[in-house]
Image (cartoon, rainbow over all chains, first blue to last red; front, side):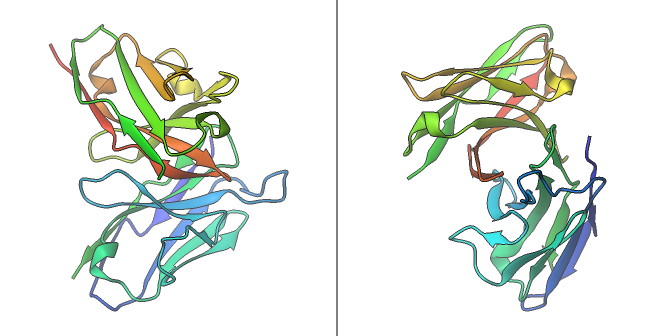
Length: 112
Length: 117
C-alpha cells in the first residue's frame, strides 16, 4: 500500500498567518493517464470531511483562493496564504492513483 | 444540489451484522462511483472500497474484503454497505462519498457504528 506521510502533525497559528502542510507518498502518484491524483480534504470539528483540492492543485469551486496546492511525484504541499478562523480543523492528503486508496495521518490546524 | 444522506447511528452486538445506507440525490446516481471510508475515533481515514452503481462492480481494500459487502439499489438511488461479524474494532464512523476526477467531491454526514454487548 502507498504510505502517505503528513507533517507537521499539528499547527498553531494566528489569524492572518500563512500555513504550509507537507505530504509525502511512498510511491509516485503520477498515473498512467499522466495525471496525479493527490487530493486534500478538511475535516472541521464534529463534521464530515469536505473537499478542498484535487489533482494536486485544482481547487473546488467554493474553496477560497487563499488555498493552494503544489507538488509532483511523491512530494506535495498545501498552503494557506492567510489563515482565517473557518480554516481550523484537520487536513488530510490522500491518493487516488493506486489501490487501495490511502490517507495521510492528518494535520491539525489550531488557532493561536 | 448533490446530497448523500446516510442512515442513523447503529448500536449492534458483537458477532452481528449491520447494513448502512447512503441515499444519493441531486445527480444521476449511475454516473458516479460511491466509495466508503472508515474513521475510527480520533484517527485517520481508511478506504474500504467502491461500487459502480451502473454495473454493480466492486473493488475492495484487501483489509475489508471479508468484512464489508457493497451493493446498490438503482430504483431508490441508494448505496449500501453491510458489515459482518462485528467486533469492537469495527466501532467507528463510516462515510460514503462520491468519486469524481480522482477525488471525492461530496461526502455523506457519516454514521457512527458502536459494537457493544
